[in-house]
Length: 594
View 1 (cartoon, one colour):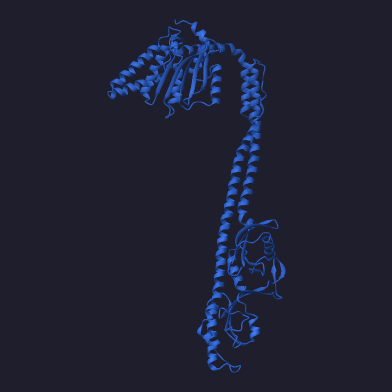
View 2 (cartoon, rainbow, N blue to C red):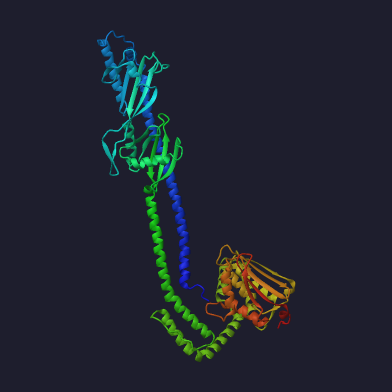
């Protein structure tokens, strides 16, 4: 009988309630993490592209200087000088001073630390912003190459510290750009008139990397597979080198994002290639640091779910021990009592409400035998009185409402409504007071129901009804006041509480050897469990919580037409409840109208 006890049911209920919460929370968390990662990736890529553009802008600006200076009049004049000796004259010296001043101004016009130099092969002079040097043409031209050139300068003996480990400082990279005049000349040609060179070291890029890293989570670096890596000054070289090794597992794209695992930790890596230099700007962020608040929230949530489940199990056990066990004892006692075993006793435990009920139960059982016959006879008298009362009972609230309607219509001088209500009410009262007949034709019963519905329709304008009877049913005898209680229930419980409801249908038909009369409404109705419970209560003795109207109809049908007659409850096609009276044709035909 007790396949699952209360403890198991409550625990299962709690688990079933927690499962959707956990699933929805996990899905929401996963979606949030994915959206956060995607948006962060877009933001990082945009910022990295912007930073790469800044580097490219500075590099392109420096590359434009030689092209501008090579057309400067003073520099052109300097190339046209012809020296008879190794010393410059005063005009040449002034010209060199002007050129040096222009070089210094040009170098100071940029935030980057750079170095400009001009070489005249004809003079074999190398001019910088602070010096003029004689240099052999062959030796000079060896250091000049067209376009951007990168040279690697090895690190010194100084050491730095990375993660507590002493390491040799990384090498420095020198970037240089050379412009030659005329443009169609090459560094190997003899017709070179002027060579202008600008160069800067990787310290400028390190400054920008340090600035880009200012938010504390980034760790950018500049990378070229052919030359090496330019680290920011606080970079973790070991981790950076491992990331570079992982990046080479797949070909590098000009613009891409990856998630790379290094030492079991995921990193979001963004890569942007510079079209000007061919170097890659790379930035990485540990995903654990970004998603740590979400992970902490997850752990706290799951811990709370575990604690809640444990507390629910404890509460379920206490409820089981304090409620279900005593309830089982009471049910066992009542079952024994139902089998007329008046020797049953319940042993109370503790001092709670169930112990009090056990005492009362024992006291009741000890007295019930002596009172049984008296109580039984009293109940029989009560049931008989209620059966008789059903035919003569007139709901006082029904009459109050009718008289109130008549009063209101009289005040409004609506004589037709007063006449109609009075007529229907008189016919209703005449029919209910005729108790001398045990059976009446079904046509008279439906006419009485029509009067009742007409009265209700005056009070409730949205109410409308249909009555459909097969011709052979019109003279079928039936006990009076059999259909009216069903219609009254449909009005009060099916139509009146719901503003959208308003239709009641009454049908009568024959099917094989049985008569059927149904009353249905378009109200809310009852689900299958409640219909079964209501039908089951019709088979039991009348209780205090059970209305006597439907119960009396069912009992009178069985008393009049046999045990296979009675009330059938089902779902109406209109949406509400359908109550059907059913009885055998032979039984009905054998009755005569008194």
